[in-house]
Length: 118
Image (cartoon, rainbow, N blue to C red):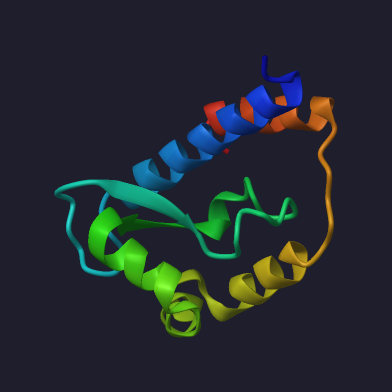
């Protein structure tokens, strides 16, 4: 049985992904809106400091652009920095280096905000 923490994190991940894809509507690299689109974390999702920050997401097509971004992180950084704006990228990068463990109340609040599209 999953803990409440794991259930909340999974729910927040799904909502985050949904909101990023709703915002972008198509692959931000190649422009396609056909096939499978995925929300990709600009700064890895392992970083709790930016994991659920909508600014930290970009929609990519699953089989070409997302694979490329995963396999070419330096080239992806060069591409994404102007897409997200350099100042926002720098802020996300700084926040992503901070260790963070969300409380259950914080996760509930994040879930509510993501449901509302914030």
